[in-house]
Image (cartoon, rainbow, N blue to C red):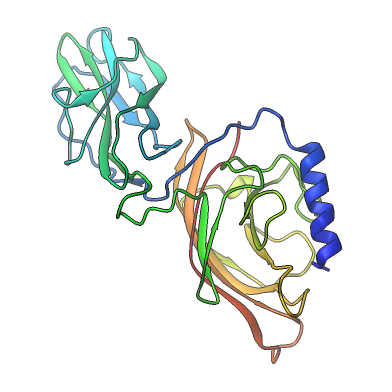
Length: 295
């Protein structure tokens, strides 16, 4: 049962067994991949832009992955960004070495509450090629960007959370035996930090981490066929009433280079999943998540 002593056990387990190498990341959730590339000159490199992460009000991290140098070696690479679409090397840019492969870029001197457009670039003797465009929003200002790894409305009340340690890394522990750690990764969203409440947990089946919409069935306390989602609210007037009844998880983007996954969710809970007449206790809507899913 998901009652208070179980939640406390989960907190203690997380404190003792969480990896000490966790990165502190402040993700914004308006990180969109337009999947559009302008026409690049013949013979120029082939590359993609990495999803933006580590977003703060003044900086962010992106990068690129060059899969082909084209007809001549890559002499310069990095990312370009601007507040208008399709930035070029005439706009703000980084210079992050040369050659083929993946690279990371630090985007700096940003303004709070601002929409930015970023593309990776690579230059050889035939010209400059650009990767797909990524759109992100820095937190703060009037943009309404949350800066949280997970957000939702729980019975209409705003939920904003990171992991218990304030970042957006996947959990390296899992006390629930029906989500085997070899097969599932756990995305924790705990509002208020280590001893906070409420908490939404998403379990992603490693073999199914791909863009798409996944239907969530009733909680059975056994290994589900694919992804699953769960709510724990220890401030509830009826602890143990938040068993998942149904819902959906939609994965909207997976970046295999940076190991980031993002998406949306909605679900409902009840006190008794075996009784079709059992009333709905919590309705969770407008859910978003943006997490690192592997090292």
